[in-house]
Image (cartoon, rainbow, N blue to C red):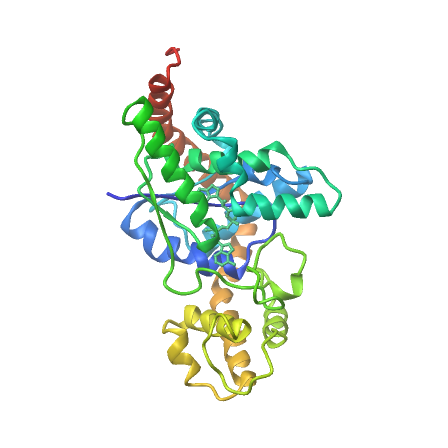
Length: 331
Ligand code: TYM
């Protein structure tokens, strides 16, 4: 059976981008068709300036939202990264396979490091080595497929390179994984800045739809989305990014494709109105279930405890064999 692994980072409230780009497929496809693990990758949240209490709160919220979105612990394994030591254990070994040049070439590193420096802050070493920890997350489980949005493709490519290099140098150990992406909405854009990704830790909150936004807030954000001054509704990602983004969101909510939908609309107003309603309806059941789960924190904790136990059992043999292969003395 295909092994799937993916994760979300608790650096902000989860967004419509996270949902359409990744989580929804985990729920609808991956957990049903594969042997799948989904992880709240809290160690990754420590790579930028952070507030410990907020990371803890967001980790709990992310786990609750994954369950609210429909991940079913009977079908898949849901857990928190820091509960399974194997991630950090393997990360160090992968640091001995990766090079600093490779790390510095990562687009997300360059962007985030530049942002930290602009703010007058310093760049944590862990921000540079982040992709190695991500590779360890994936490789520890013998993962075949990594369902992610577009922005993670480069990290998964690096993971493949590291796996191949390790296998060539130290003997076949790792499965070489591949990224999978959704047909539409692999890169949901910020509604106010449609040439930038809708990212959960961005400052441009009016352009970000959060999974827990009230319906009225969702409507307001979508209705105020930046478009352009042209009159016709045309799907063109390059020339008309704002409209293209709305068409992709609408298509992803209801099925269908953005190109076809562009022919259905004569004005931006109706396109926005329908998109807003589609998003509200998409989020409604997730929000309702989230409220129920918040009233039962013991259930969520139990799922995470069981998940970590299962994950640990799956990862340990792989990490042990990587330790042996690279030359470490068995304990
Ligand atoms: P993160 O937490 O930024 O995002 C979680 C998932 O959501 C996708 N995503 C988007 N998809 C479409 N449009 C968007 N605007 C959008 N924003 C986010 C991401 O592509 C991702 O699939 N490094 C990862 C977390 C991670 C991971 C892993 C993922 C750590 N280890 C191992 C897979 C496997 C990250 O920061 O995701």
